[in-house]
Image (cartoon, rainbow, N blue to C red):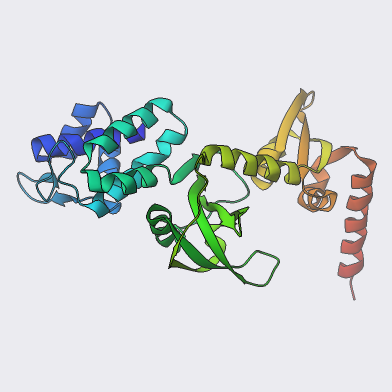
Amino acid sequence: MRADRLVATLLTLQARGRVTAAELADELEVSVATARRDLEALSSAGIPVYPQAGRGGGWQLLGGARTDLSGLTAVEARALFLLVGPAASVDPDAKAALRKLVRALPETFRSDAAAAADAIVIDPGEWGRPAADRPAQLAVLEQAIVARRRVRIEYAAWNRDPVERLVDPWGLVRKRERWYLLGAVDDAERTYRVDRMLHAVITDEPSSRPVDLDLPEVWERVTDEVDRQRSRARATVIVDAGVVPLLQTQFGQRTVVEEELHGLRTRIRVTAPTEQLIARGLAGWAEYLEVVEPESLRDELRRLGQALVVRNVER
């Protein structure tokens, strides 16, 4: 698991002072490319790990940090636990290891490190298309969660005007390449997509956080509700087998293969928030598929086809 490797990498640097990516790869039994990515991840997270060029060079942990982690600054400790903490949401062993690491920190750093370790959940599933870049407001939100401060955001949902919200931030979730903020507004649980935040500012107001908060459990409730909303309409379709991967790209996990048929044909089930969205997604592949059910979806496809003809006849 990557969290284990990151901590092992840090401890190796503390013990040896300087290592090359090849030496680290041999030590941890991973590829050189993997070792190099882990070193770069630690450095990018703000932990004082730097490459030294030239003969006798390699990667070095600066600042005299020792194997008990007491040489890390508060900022560096928080960065480390933000980086390795997400593994605790999916692996009990990683959670136990993080608890031990927290106890190895100077006492004054432990609260922030523990908060950072609990701040992020990783969800490998997929909703829609991935975002290209790390959202601009993510660092501000991480700081607000660890510092237990409310954050004021300006949020623009895809179909609404921007609004301002004062949020008690509980934690962050990365679902593939998208990030979501979990928290509360006026004591009501809320979820916000980070790349739709126009601004985010940390306030001086302390945030409210449930004493028994379990971030993975909160996210599970959110995903259950989103999946329910996204699956209100469904259709069964027979389609050319070669088109199935294209529909899976378009509809994501909402495309389920039910049966492989003769003649390179496949029966699939597609779900979406509305029947109209299913129809619009299937319309581009109309010559390769037949709708089995519902009849109302066939009616909607016929309506779209007629509208296309009417609007594009020769003038």
